[in-house]
Amino acid sequence: MRKINFITGVFSLFFIVSDGNTMSSTPQNPWAGQITNFMGSMPDNTQGYKVLSYPIKVMSGKKEQGFYYSQYVFFKHPGDQNAAYYMGIQPWGDNQAKVIFSVFGANVEKQDPKCTDEADHKNGSSCYAFMPFEYDVEYKFIATLVSSTSSGNIWEGYAVNTVSNDARRIGSWKTPTAWGLLSGKSIGFIEHFLSIENCSLLPATSALFGPGVGSVSTAESVTGKLTAAYSAISEPCKGKIPFSSTIQADGSLLVRQDKGIN
Image (cartoon, one colour):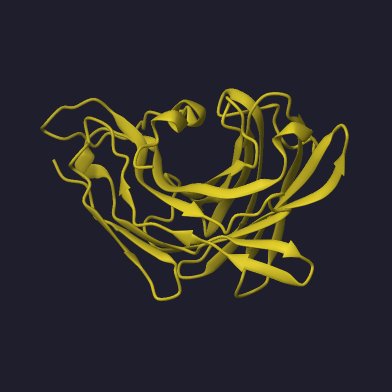
């Protein structure tokens, strides 16, 4: 799988035009969107996973809002709507980060008042919380099944600072029973969700993504694999945001994205 075309409709990014006054001498249409994608997989599990955990460490970049570092994970039986959820982190300024737990698909029910009845203007539900943010600190994003009945499966999302052990319960939603458990098949990404007026205004960033860890039983877990990153950059910035990726000895993926160019 080298393309994400069948996913982009689900993401349906909400572009926000910056009100900054900095303009380039080379006019172009405002741009926002995904920069890099990479694939993730877990050892095949007939039932699927009741718990999945994905580590993300933002190593450099701007501390203000703009970047989103995330893993987008499919359910075991996603159907025609490609039912999936994503979790990730958005640095938000003032040494804070917004952590997100969203699900995409029809017939989802939010379980927390703070969660929404939609996700990125599509069917689903979105939950978020704020927590202290630091560079070079691994944050673990955990989706866990807390209840399973004939009416659906209830999932909770958590973000954990692995250095301080500070944890945030992000929220909870219920998915249709037909979706099953979590497959462990994922698409990781870095995106810039705020519009920039010129590609050269995109700052550099780097992040380390760990492979997924799935619980098979209370006593056993398995670790997945990640592929190298590939470009997801759309026009007019296609070819103007250099990046590289390297798979580390422990299976994690280091993604380095340079400053954009004209």
